[in-house]
Length: 62
Ligand code: SF4
Image (cartoon, rainbow, N blue to C red; front, top):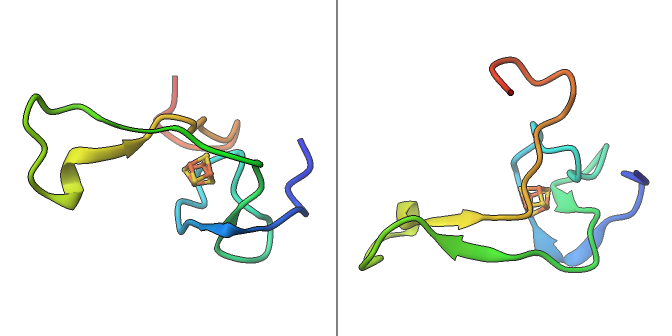
């Protein structure tokens, strides 16, 4: 995984993700999947990045 790449089209602050850029608040993937866990999403909290994967060092990950 090359976390030095910063996709300037995908800003992200989730640095627990293994795809997060190692220095800046960007994603290192070419594209991501955004989804919802709600039947009727009405707030930002209803949306998720489905491309998220926990870093190996992330506490609480499976
Ligand atoms: S995969 Fe999603 S959560 Fe992970 S760095 Fe990219 S945008 Fe952020």
